Image (cartoon, rainbow, N blue to C red):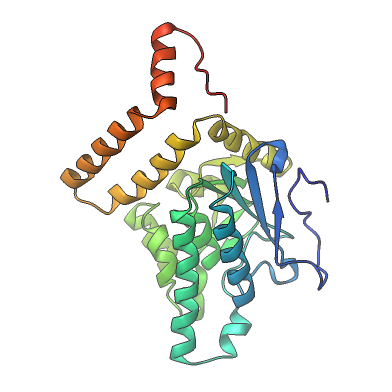
Length: 275
């Protein structure tokens, strides 16, 4: 595998291939780490092992010099959701509570990661797979991708996917997806706020690279502080949110990169952000 490209979308992953393929400087962009879910034969269903592997890799990237993290999927699907065969094999309340707690921990790890996380969606993202897309900070999809929270079709309301879905879409749009289980296409997903950009399949990598490169070009301190502030203030009342935002901006303004950026604007020159 080329070190600058994500894992290939092979039809079946050999037993000796890891569940998560990590690529550094992915898509030819320095500072981009790509985590490719590698269960193509199971449509990248989130088995316990895959959840653990993704959790481990994300946690490991937090303290690296990676500036942007991309989550992708090998094979035909991005992610089909939880592994239903595995779930059905252990029908106990204790097991299901532990499983959904494990998945929720993964989702919160994405939000708490200092780096922005981009979902690269080339195919179907269903149930917990759609939850994964919604939980990522940004998402770029092929125009052939489709999205659904389809548990209701099996008699199971997608309660945990509802958490990020209701925080990305309007309430009525989220409820329609949750109550009907119907798929929406990439263009509707963008219109509803689930994803940021749509591209033809052959241009998907370029679209991901463009978005990632734009973020990587910004000062890392401002990006990381901004991501943390964004999610904390969402859970606050307006007054408390303004207090936290004001404090964050004041601290950010004292950072050398911001001082240089403002001075460069005054001087009508490009900022000098050499590392």
